[in-house]
Each structure stands twice: as structure tokens, then as C-alpha cells.
Image (cartoon, rainbow over all chains, first blue to last red; front, side):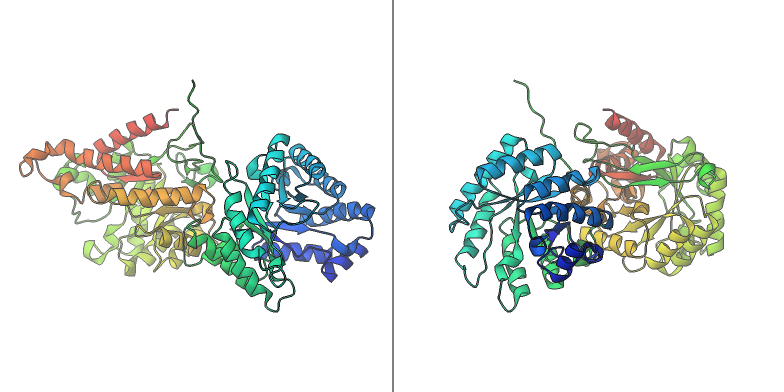
Length: 271
Length: 321
């Protein structure tokens, strides 16, 4: 189970202030901390730190510049502003560009055209959302249909299916419980859409929005997702219980050979 | 229509291990040997790199009451096996790439050599031939710790490979290897989970993973080599698909395993239907070695000169692209 570390996000006050005051320390500290705790990517999202689109471009460039030298991990450039992502990609060093994630593109033709062309040009990976301008569909079938459209468009642009991370979009279970099993069904089907199979990803903490014990819901859903073909989550690698579950799924699905220290090894990616 | 060859794409290669240090590298060996580094399953040249040839380390045993069968001793020479230095020279002439010195004499039941005496034997062997050296303890855990420490210190800088580290006792040997620039053999009883755990534990003592070689404790042909193969294969696939704690070269004590079996040493008179012993014995050892090669073994520890000749011929053929 790959972990996209979610903490360098302008939603969090320390990161927001960091971005606004151009103080790199909170971003550097969180990037290092997440790496140490077992993340595979550092997600960079300015979120509400920016007042307008021009600021988003500058913020992304600045975040890449300060975080990239602080970590060995590849980055996930997380923005709805594709100019910001493109400017960010230009700053990624060659060793990391293939593992860099564009986060993300929905199933909308214009956006797919732009993002997949960009991914092909830079040779990087893409998080694809199974939603369109009308929003997130209810049923698994509609999610899978959009996933197929995303895979087909990526293929036409020259982006291989195993460079895609398809996110069938989980919604908070306290308001949209119906989606939880539908997303699991969709995960299993998405893995059959192409050969090599596309990867799957979820913004895990969404499932527990505004619930009192978020970590419990997150890690339970992670285990359920893993058994349906979930490959990666955008999550908090500092959540020990969550990481223990993530490590255990790899052993219990026979993806990693068991050893007594399997949790430790899972978190020490750079051993 | 042309047939499309399907190729597996692996995440990472096995680590390479360098055995022996030349003068330039701080030792006295005539050459050093690099093993491992495979980017694919054994000898699948069409699919990935097999940059280093598997090597044969021929055994020198310090046991003064050597309990090897006559047929094997006769192939080497009674006077030769009585003298580790002479034995090492014999092995070099027989085509050994390296020497595997087994210090059985450290065991109180097999001579009871002191740690200092054992260290001297290792130095004698180093003086006798310029081949890289692998040294293993007697198997008696109560004496081996001190013996291997003494050997490690006396041979500092030579870049030896020392064994055996096992789950129950590995710390002293790791410390000895770490401080004196040697590699370590991590031995597990045909158990991939214990194998992985032991590598992790050794790694936690800050031993670079590049200096660990795995001994999965293989068996002989006819005595469960299929199971040994399946363990090696599982570990190697795990390594190639990204498990860093299993991505080390393999060593196997083929000679010890093969010559334990009566199929190897049983006399022609007693087992006439099995054919001539002088051919059957080496064939048993060579066949065991051949199975190990297919499991991914990089260092074969062997005994009979004819078996070595046969397997070296096969290694050359397998390495031909």
C-alpha cells in the first residue's frame, strides 16, 4: 500500500501561514516527518492559502522549490490549476520526474486533453478522478465507465495505464454511506480495465469527515479497500494505527513476505 | 507470425557482494570476486542482467578427525586433507574460485582448537593461496563466537565472508564483521520468514545490506531439494519485486549436503545397481549444485574436484547469452 502524505496542505494552518509568509520551515519539517513515517509521496497543495489563480502558480513553484531538496521522495502536485502543475513539473529533477504525480484530472474532455498531454510530455504519473462536471456518480458502474474513459484518453495521449492512479472517490460515510460499498466494487473492476492494470487510489480521510473517531474509519476502510485492489491512499503517514493496518494488508494479501518486523520494514522504505 | 516473447519487468536487482580484497583494496588477495546483482531470475538473459557469474568455493576443513568418507578423501589425498594450507593449494589447482574454510576443529569434539589456533589456520590458508576466503565456524555455538571474532580480527582488511549468523546468535558475529570489514552469512533453516527477519535484525545493527549473503540451508538431491528450490525462488521473486530485505546473493553448502547421502558415498560393491561410485558421488554433488544454481545460488561451497569441474562447465554454458 503506497501512502501519499497529505500533510503539506494549505488546509492546515501552519502550512497555510508558511505559504503566505514564504516561510519554508513548516513544509520542510512535515515533508521530512512524513518521509520518516513511511510515506511514498509528499502531496503539495496550497489550498486556501491562495486568494487567486496567479497566486496558485507562484505558490506551487515555491512549494516545489523548498520541499524537493528536503526529501528523497517524489512529489504529488495537487491543484485544480493546471498552469500551477505545469510550472511545478518544470522544476522537478530528472531522477524524480517519472514518479511525480499530477493530482488530479476529472473525467472532463478538455481537462483530460490538457493533463494527459502534460503527463506524456513530462513522463509522469496522474491521479484520475471518476467524476465529471455533474459531480460524483452514485453507482459503481458509472465510476467504472468514467475510469474506462480516463484510461482510453490517457492511452491516446501516450500515457501508459500503469502510470495512472484512478480514484473512484469516497465520500464521507456520515452523509453518503451508500457510496462506501460502491467504491469498493468500483476498485475491483478498475483493476480489470487494462493490462497492465491501472493503479487505484483513494483520498482516504474523506470517508471519515466530521466523524468523531476518524482514524478508526480510515484504517478500517483502508483494509477493506486493500482487499478490493486499492494500491495507494492519500493519508496521514503519522497515524500509527493506520500504517500498521496498511503494512498488515500487504502481508495478509501475500504481497510482501512475512517477517516479525514487517510493520517496521514497511515504514522504513529506504532501508 | 513471429512469436512475441513476454518479459517480466522487475522493480530492483539483487544486491551485489564483493568477496576478497586485493592489495589496492587493503588486502592481499590476488583478485576479488563480485557475486549477485541479478536483475532477473537465474540465467534469464533475454529478460534482464545477470552481471556476475556464480562462483565455486572449495572446502578446506580443519577437523583433525575428518569424518568424510574414504572415496571423497581419496579424491583429494589423505596427506592433503591433513594440512589446511596444502588443501587450499589443491583446491586452487582443482579450479576453485575461492576457498571455503570450515573450522570444525574449533569444536571440542573435533580437536578443540583455540580461537587463536583457528585464526592461525585462517592466516595459513590466506598465506598459501591468493584466492578470496570464506570462513565458517564449527557449528558449536558455545565456541564459535570467540573463534569467529579472533578470525575476523586476524584477517582484518581481507574482505572475508564469515558465517554463520543465526536468529539465536548473530550479534557478536555482526559486530566482528562490521568492525573488520568482512561480509556476513545469514543462515536460516529453510524458512523465508526467518530469513527475512534475520536480515532485518542484522541491518538494524547498521551492517550495510550489501555485506549480507543469505544461506537458506539447502538440502541434497533426493532429500528435499525441491523444497529448498521453492524457498529460494520465493525469496528471489520477493527480492526482484521490491523487497529490499531479501535482495542479497545466496550461498549454499552443497558439498556438505550431497556427501551426507549414501547415494553419493555408498560403495559400488554395496549398491551395484546404482552404478560406479567414483562417478556417482561427484554426479550427486554436481546435480545438487545444478539445482541450487537454478534457485539463484551465487556461491557454491563444494568438495569433490570432479563435481567442481562439471559444475564450472555448466556455469559457463548457462552464462553464455
